[in-house]
Length: 140
Image (tube, rainbow, N blue to C red; front, side, top):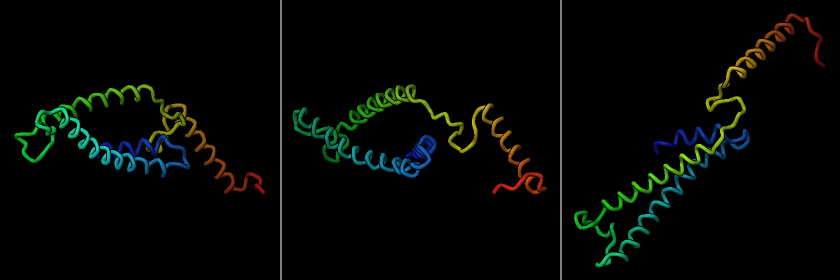
């Protein structure tokens, strides 16, 4: 849930113009899939560890935390999170951001783009002043 803002910003800034709303809806889709997989994952771990245990009870069987092995389950989640972080780092190094001159907030990035943007604004401002004064011919 803490990464939702960053995820939505990533989808919005990296998606093509016509698909931004669809891309931001993917952030909610990934959360819903995560909730579903979480509940399926807990059931699968309980079933697998129940088959391996002598008494037939898995790590998460029942409500007695003193008899259960919830600590093993959380250690397993910690290892799984480290593997997930490793995959994230590999994907992040592989990924190349769009180079369209805009950052995620709608601003222009880079000195060349800033100078180009300033030049276009000055040119458009001068043309507008000339049109107001009537110095240029009418565009018909």
